[in-house]
Amino acid sequence: MSFAALLFLLIYLAMFGVVYHEDEGTPAHLFQIWLSLEMIMILFFAVKWLPQKPKQASFIFLIQIIAVLAVCFPVFYFGF
Image (cartoon, rainbow, N blue to C red; front, side, top):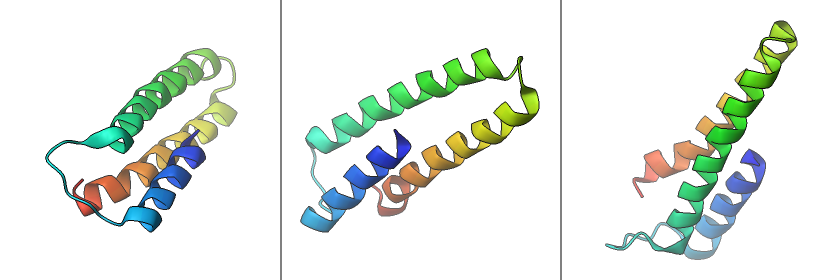
């Protein structure tokens, strides 16, 4: 899911570049929906797997957090 959002963001930047508008637009709304769903998915993973297999699940949990931060980085860097 993070890879799909990163791919969406990179394709949008490649096609339109950094565009500043007063209205956020559809891409920003899609990103916000994705971020909400991603947080729910990560929370579900943590609740389900961290108590059962803490060592293996914490590694996957760390990868998920890094993937979310990697997708959020261009948004914060370019100041959309």
